[in-house]
Length: 87
Image (cartoon, rainbow, N blue to C red; front, side, top):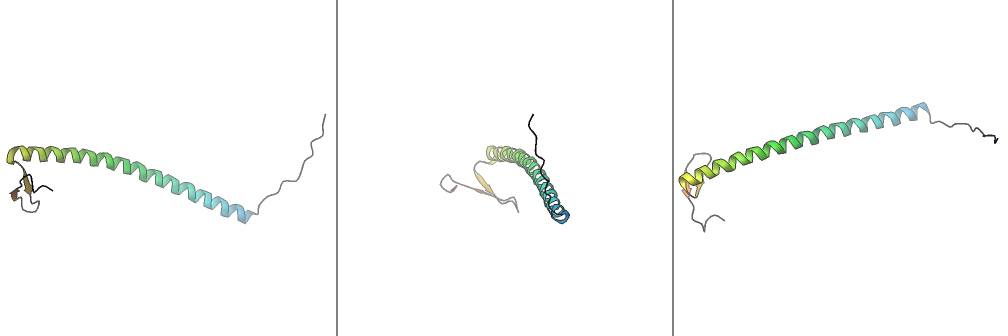
């Protein structure tokens, strides 16, 4: 049977350990917050997609009713647009 030589374990100072632990904790907290922001971003993108679909539906209804028009959102006034003026 071989003898295992035990060596002395070295440690960092308690102040160094405190600084290190504080920074690791801060990093973990920031990563959790970032994850929360990303989840919120995903939810908002989903909502935007839904609103965009609703907007497209309204635009289609208005186009079917009034034809190809440009609508001033402040006044509701319509200007008929020829196919050449769209761009």
